Image 1 (cartoon, rainbow, N blue to C red):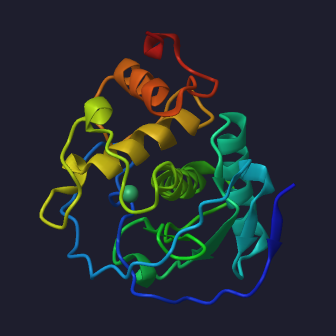
Image 2 (cartoon, rainbow, N blue to C red):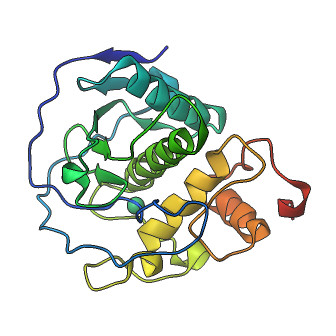
Length: 224
Ligand SMILES: [Zn+2]
């Protein structure tokens, strides 16, 4: 059961590590990222739990909570564990995310994500919000796999370059990891993704990153 409680307190300096703007989903175009403000290092959570056991902190609506709960269920079904607490906010003005669909602050205590995609009860808007939520949670998952001091280096799996403000979004290793993980957790055959890779490559990278196969339903053409 996913618990939900506590008041939202936005703190620390925000640093954009959200996915590329999803405005053109499913067209895989990538816009230039905005300049990211400096990061404030904070101790991260090292206690990992089943995703459906974690505590969501933040003042979010029932509809927003449903999106987060759906995403955590997908992580749980893939047996990907997450820190025991995550602070979640939605900002439909987009200000929090500086033009990106989401924001992740994995070094905050607890780790914090913000979703800036507008959302509805169904259709493309809901899908975009779901993808943004999976993407930001994938960043939290990725960061939590290491000792908390830096992003675990998965360039041998996803390619790209080490992260940095001077590295284009689509070339950043941490963004490639989040793209692959969020792709593997979606719940439909046709999966919008910001990558030029064939889905069979995304499948293989997901297995290499997580040790699990992507969640069903998977199209046969994506199976190695
Ligand atoms: Zn991202």
